[in-house]
Image (cartoon, rainbow, N blue to C red; front, side, top):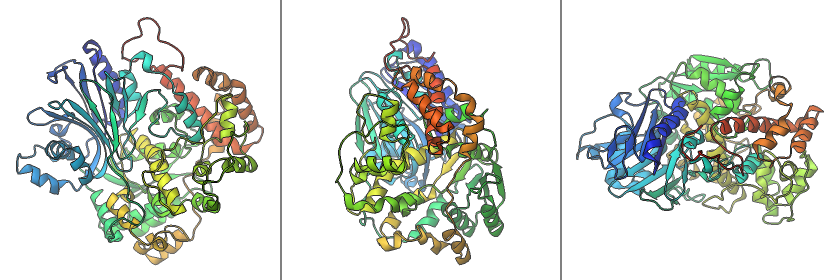
Length: 628
């Protein structure tokens, strides 16, 4: 697990400063080692600066020796790799490569480097099990390749103007490599954030900066030209996965994610997914420490259930109380989330990761179960209207500061059934977005279409989530909050072998009432009874308390600040009106107000790092790539 970055086609005189600023932004992701390697235009190593550079900030998990550090080069210097992630079960493939040349390290990084060089990117990617985002340079072919894993567990952003190219794990790690004139706020990115509470791939909040979508790769010629982005992983249509033993696949997925040269732990709530992982870990002979976020004296505290399971399994249990006040930590939490991101559960997850990172460097989590086994209530609610299909009443909704049930129903009818699904967990409705941004027509959503469109309505919703919500919301939140503290998060339920085995099951076995009942087969009967017939709480923080106390001091001047930060795109009076309604008792606006507060703090931080408003041009002399 690491942070990666690089640039090509820079002014050699500015390269050292740009690299230093990029590595500083990536430091939390790689606390154990940070390196920059510079290259001249023809690809030769340059000790202190060059037109090109590869950067790496390392969190050492497998083979922590310096010889496994990156950027990593082939023995002849032709190939170079920067890699973020963890690949499991690679040793068998490495044995074939070692016959030609012995491995110098025990790292999966060297396996990736040697595998790409020997087999090519397209042949290697399907062989990989795990999570990854990497950059691979072939100096002989003069080509850069970026790739991202199947489900989007690891982030990767890029920018190109045809002559120059830059990439990074973080938007904040990318900004220093951009010319000042290119650091402009994206109108589409801003509206996408209001719509979804996050900015879906391929957008970002910076115009021209793109997220590489999950399961995609990018090729760029080092001598200049347009990047070519293509999908390398295409999920199989429902029912086409190869049959397999899903229980064996689950145990193998968990076992593989226990391999580490650093201490390993477990995120444990009182819910089904993490309880299944804890139970199978114990059955496999692993007694890792478990970590649970606590919300004392609230109805959504799950520490009692988690503690009971730990006693039963003989696991050491760490309870992490989420502080009653987040005032002092709010800027750091927003910074860790990189660009605007407003899931309230990211706040307790940030605190849980902070405490966990003091004890272990790797942690297993339960992400992916709901998207695989249809665990969210919103699926059942939206399926009630599946008869509507493509029928809808077109037109832009009325601008309004609130989204009551009647307004939401009108907006849902204004979109085809599948498009309207985003209203089940959106940030702001189209009417609210129009209220805050008077004038322009706005799209219903910014989702990418699934690569395979199933015929079954439930499978359609799952495909939408896998293409959008899972990689860019759930997994991005997990990556950013944990890696912000130098903690590696692994997701056994997203092992693609396990996913394919479950997808091959008959729908009646996979989709049950209550949801996820399939997993009861790997649990003791009494524990299954408790888990599957109790109320699902979710990871809900005390948002009302925070908005009424810790964050209330941010309310004065919020409308004016957001209008300035957005170059007038957000109407200050509209922001103020929404805030007044909330403070007057409109509790349904709580998450919308949090969105505005996070947007305010995030844009202030980003503009301090060089981001500009939509139309502001650089001042004279502001032409370099280094952040102010």
